[in-house]
Length: 145
Ligand SMILES: Nc1nc2c(ncn2[C@@H]2O[C@H](COP(=O)(O)OP(=O)(O)OP(=O)(O)O)[C@@H](O)[C@H]2O)c(=O)[nH]1
Ligand SMILES: [Mg+2]
Image (tube, protein in one colour):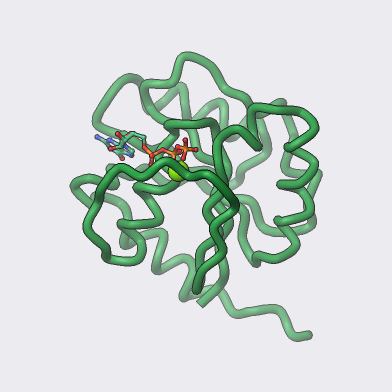
């Protein structure tokens, strides 16, 4: 199983997605610090929202095999600049959360503009699309050390 780090603004749905990926009950819990457990690294949205803290996210990316950039379908803007994925030498996937709300196509376009080649659509509350991400993490073979 590849290790995944979740990045995105506060409220994008990182913690809810991590609960769904782990098969836990979905319940609101504000992320106060970088939460490093089993195959998931959950980060507080403030790290993506603040330029200086954003540098820490780049460093944490090296602790993971795959980086996920999250945008909710009902977000009004994207925090991620074009081609930001080149900041890390890890696979970067895009995840559109809250896929049954707002405009998932626009969120997908923002993620692709930022450099994500693969984009998943999820609703972590109903678990739609969650299995596809798990399959993606299981299918990829880990690079040899
Ligand atoms: N319907 C729906 N609601 C979601 C989904 N993901 C998250 N939410 C809701 O959005 C709110 C914020 O979700 P969180 O998972 O706490 O967001 P976060 O990105 O971890 O936020 P920070 O910890 O502040 O960085 C919660 O009320 C969730 O229930 C989703 O896929 N579908
Ligand atoms: Mg959180």
